Amino acid sequence: MRNLHNFLFAFLFIISFKVFSQGSPNYDGGMKVNLNADGKKYFRIISWAQVQATYTDQVAENASKTSFNLRRARIIMYTQLNSKFLILTHFGLNSLNASNMSSNGNGEASQLFFHDVWVQYQIANNHTVGAGLHYFNGISRLNNQSTLNFLTLDNNRQSWATFGLSEQFGRHIGVFFKGSFGKLQYRLAINDAVVNGLDSRIPVNNGSAVYSGARLLGTKDAGKTFAGYFDYHFLDQESNFLPFKVGSYLGEKRIFNVGFGFFAHPKGSVLSDASGNLKGENVSIFALDAFYDAPLSDEGSAITAYAVYQNNNYGQNYLFSAYGTGSMMYTHVGYTFAGDKSKTRFQPYVSFANNSYDATQDNRNILGIGANAYFSGHNSKLTLEYHREKFGVTSLNTLTLQAMIYL
Image 1: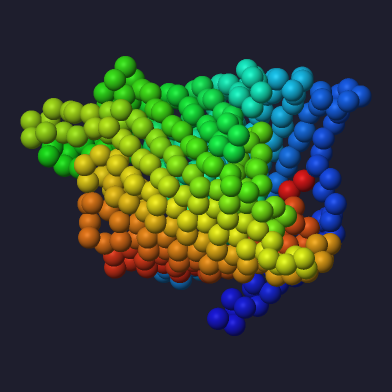
Image 2: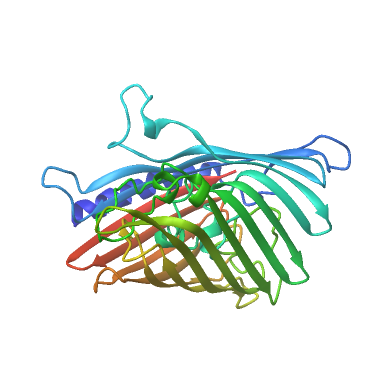
């Protein structure tokens, strides 16, 4: 434990020095370049990196319990010719570490790829249509979560409910519609389902479902997915200019939203009968959630809270990796201490998830306890989190320190 303490202290000191040397209390819109006098024609670039040091208690006998991880390195650029047209590109890499690096940098984990590429057109005031590789997802707020401003260290993994199963890294290729009717915001999408998803298993006769309908049945029967999310904004209105939902406003807004979302993939999963004949099963997921973020005092204290109930139907007795037919309840809450916004501020938080599965009597319970240190809002922060995950007889405890800067 003393070695762990020394390791974390040294890492904290090094990263804190760099953060203070690069952070700015006045972000002022970031890197935006106006292309005409009134600023309606422009392009903007957002760049960020998240670096982690992790201690894990359950590792192989010959493996180190401490490791480093480049969790995300991303760049977004979007541009508008005028208020009606927008094109966005988003590329980068994720979770690069000693286990998946390559000696000459040409390994799969080292390669940049496009996370998003879409175009959109405003068809009426507050209503837009777009197409491409996009992040206008359904189901819940967390399935549309930005990676720039988490309250917790990272997103609740099971909330990215179709990750790699029907799409690529949380994104589908298709057509989306987004907009608002007064205080009600909406996003809807019709997409193609990925053929080569993470679930590459072959169905066992009289066994459980496999999420590979597009691969095993063909795209004519199982090639389309449908998604939507609707949230009503009781207090301040959030922007829906981009699809990425904010995790914590640190009390800069007064937000209370209630949302409902869904995802449907007809014949997305496959069952095999006793004779080996394949049959498609419909995948359907829906969720109800609520988000609250508000200041508690004039001195800067604030609360952030979120809760969601999600019902998951991936097919009969489906269980694969983090996903399974059943239900999920998740919540997190954080408190931002009062303080000068130009100086370091602290935000402790706690999160808890309970996942139940039809295929087993064991529940997956996940507890997170952590704190954020903000040096320049979300633009420069440190996060320290203890994470405990228990599923049946298996339990995993990790302690992670993450440094993030985005410009």
